[in-house]
Image (cartoon, rainbow, N blue to C red):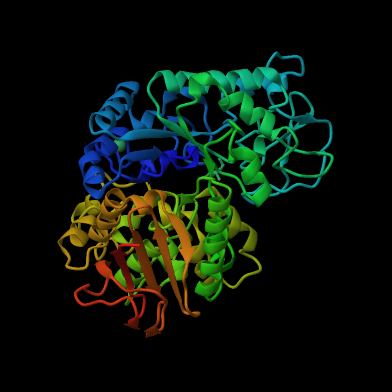
Length: 532
Ligand code: GLC
Ligand code: CA
């Protein structure tokens, strides 16, 4: 098998720990809460768990502002809880992937507290400093310039994200050494992989005015991960990617990252983060086909992802999350998770959890959302502004996970840190599992099929879509093939070429008698297996 396919049998589940399960009733999700749910995840077919940051943090950006990389956030538990989680995973044959936030620290990190105190402090050079703002770059979270004045030194420091997230100066070899030690620390504790936060930001190009993807990115990544000691671990980079960057980062023999996310398809159904646009599913298909063909032809890995903690629910943007919620959630599940690549799903996705809805801004917590609200409050009419907030807020992905219809929807005993999901009574794990239309059962079946059919892991991807309004593809392996047919929102006839000898193994409209070609209902999806 090629090295690209090395992780094609990992089925990864992302946990946002603060919102997953509160084990001790203080209203905040924690590590022991994740440990409680490991059998639930195992039952779904998950064999790797990525947890968003659980390190010490003042929580300006929910843990993406780290004040101690080697310790656990008070709200999340203790190092002993972390060990128990790791042991619990490993005992079940599951992997643990941690978040690695290398571009910035918290302003409460010891390094920054030292660095900002005086110009000749030994830690000063751990960050970027300038006498005057070097440029007009704006923070990605809104709120103005990336340059913030620091009175004790009379200089400005750079923060790509919140003011409390100063960017580390990776041109300083000491910083690179520190970050390497942190990687080694967690690997020696038994971590199986890292999701590398905004990793292309670690190299900046001030001359050519690029905030990310600077000239030294590949040197830094190679120095960090191109070492025998960490050869075996899984790494996935969060970065904006074009073809050449992907090749340069995880192409054969690069020894940088094992894979990177590709997010182009996530723009389906929006013109920008906070504004809706009619979803163009034919366009979505074209994007997926493009990246499948590209990664396959270069023997590159690909991560299959539709949802994460920074995105609103994909089904709410691209599908119908009201009357046809089950149908669209499962159609997208079939459409994405039979592709060539490494499946990654986000908490709540397995029950078709859509966006929530609130009338008041007090239900929102995210720093990016609140900045957007503040900046538009004077100019955008209030109703429209709340519409945009409900549509685009990252809070959508961060509502306490609804486990049942009971108190706090089963999240925990105490009052949750943020508003419960507005649809948690109607949509929760317990209800989904009891339902004849269980999204969880559909995902479980997908993972079973991926385990059973070799062609779903290593087979070739081929687009066989006969017309617009649908997506049909096949995966062709050594011993057989799988054909996936997904109809979009309008019912109609789909005539798939060359489809004899196939048997339906999964369908979201009741599979018996489902033939490959024929009439398809709105968001109907079916999966067929057969010989070559
Ligand atoms: C990444 C994370 C996001 C975080 C940001 C700053 O985009 O996914 O949640 O706010 O980086 O660390
Ligand atoms: Ca708790």
